[in-house]
Image 1 (tube, rainbow, N blue to C red):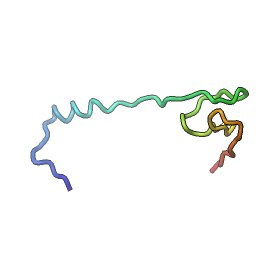
Image 2 (image 1 turned 60 degrees about the vertical axis):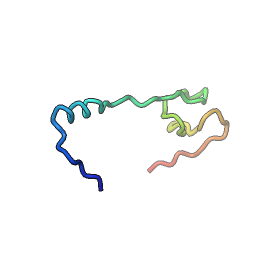
Image 3 (image 1 turned 90 degrees about the horizontal axis):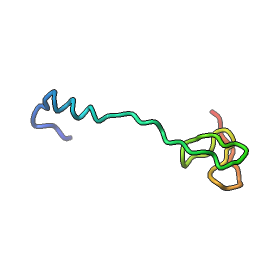
Length: 63
């Protein structure tokens, strides 16, 4: 297990933590012309179940 040899100063710690920023997730528009809802890329659309421009639809499993 890696163990630091020296104590990290408050200044260095805060400078490192200052880079932890949140980002809004990138969303894409559904390829289904009837749906056109926003969803995460590389996932099936939660409203219509379509994945990409394919015509075959997938069933959305609700849990």
